[in-house]
Length: 104
Image 1 (cartoon, rainbow, N blue to C red):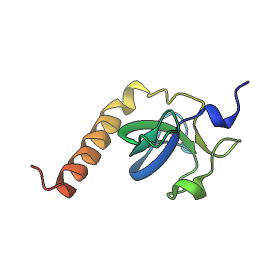
Image 2 (cartoon, rainbow, N blue to C red; image 1 turned 45 degrees about the horizontal axis):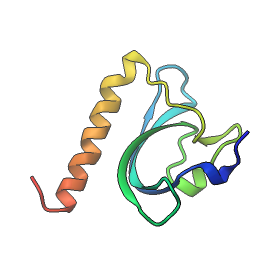
Image 3 (cartoon, helix red, strand yellow; image 1 turned 120 degrees about the vertical axis):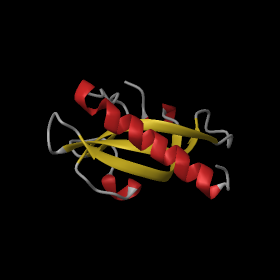
């Protein structure tokens, strides 16, 4: 099994939590931030949907892995009935970024 060093480095700049319809303990963490895939300092802005257990807001406090927290190694399987909310969250984060850059 690969170790944590093979994962990209994430810098969360903004996010929205959406409770899944599957289980009230689980959330989609719709993420916008910097991603450094090669860990070489080439940080690129990206939108990602993570799967998270618990509603902790802060990236570090939410924790990574284990039974609780953000699941970096598990894809966020977006349930059909949740898709509109996830798409809306992605669009909201994109609009926040445009507003911060002074774009319409």
